[in-house]
Amino acid sequence: MEKVINFDRAARRALFGQEPEIPGAGSSAAKTPARHTRVKITINLDEDIVEHFKTLAQAEGRGYQQLINDSLREYLEGSKGERIAKEVGELLLTDETFLARLAESIAS
Image (cartoon, rainbow, N blue to C red):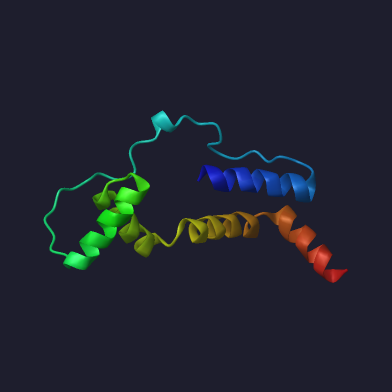
């Protein structure tokens, strides 16, 4: 979310010469509870799948189970870029000033 907020601020400054007040900006991450709770499970996967993730994990210096989890999360929620684009789009489409300026730009 922080990257979206930073992009939103930069976009508003560029478009309108101002910085908006953003609810929750500057709040401590320590006040926010953990997003997900880990659950221990047993799962059977094809050997080549496990080897693929182990190879990737070794190259990245991460755990292969974390990579599998990240891949499943991306499948559910979309890639990070897709999520950021969606959030930015939602922010801009609810900003009346932005929409007015966009309409003016299109009309001219």
